[in-house]
Length: 307
Ligand SMILES: [Zn+2]
Image (cartoon, rainbow, N blue to C red):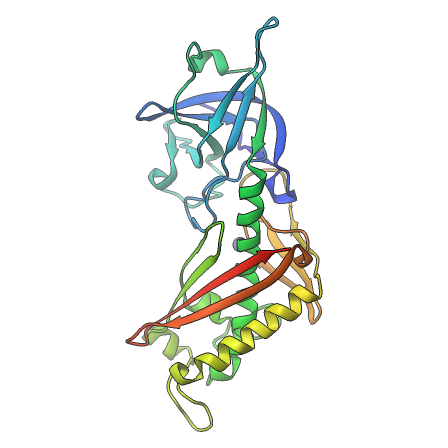
């Protein structure tokens, strides 16, 4: 099978689009993955599955006066075609990292079943209208934008806890606690949940969770750190900072970057997801920090409220 890498319009915020079906791939359990030349749908990333997939509909116009058929897209996955075998692999079965240039990278729109009278072959080469559930998309975008802002605010609030330069700084020059300690990051329509590991390797890089000199232990400082983070987040929301995605090319695998023009300067983070256009789309953004009983794991649950 030879298929071109899918062109995507979700980074610019699109939720609808027209395209042509290139292939319909069986996913088992009666489900099908529809591949189109282009799409506004954001698929789950197999390498870093932080933002859940878009859902929505795929509408096939009726032939010769027949009614259009609307098919529910219940999930959206990443597929990749092995250049050696031509085999199409899906999600966790893909053995290479996203963007490997020898492979083709595909957005698979998952149909739970095919409507009566619709065969996979009959869909290929048909024009279709793709519509993303815009309400769900906006909620996921809000959580994803909140996730990146939390990273910057937390880095700033924890900057004093580094005894030496860990060699990685964020856009504002603060030690990048977020990327150095990140264990997992997951968004849903309500919040972003980021889990950080405070283990030996982070300590070796210079982070201190213990009380030293003027610095209280992290556990004791948590309320102050939380208030500090939330103050920064509130100020950024109040500033209605513009957000955009830098898109170097239309392909799913293009290396995109999130940009936010914050009062202190322009912040950028590598990102494959979707985002709000301005922070004024939020009425508030607040995080809750939870330290595990043994002190080895810090969890941030960051909730955006939309204006
Ligand atoms: Zn991101």
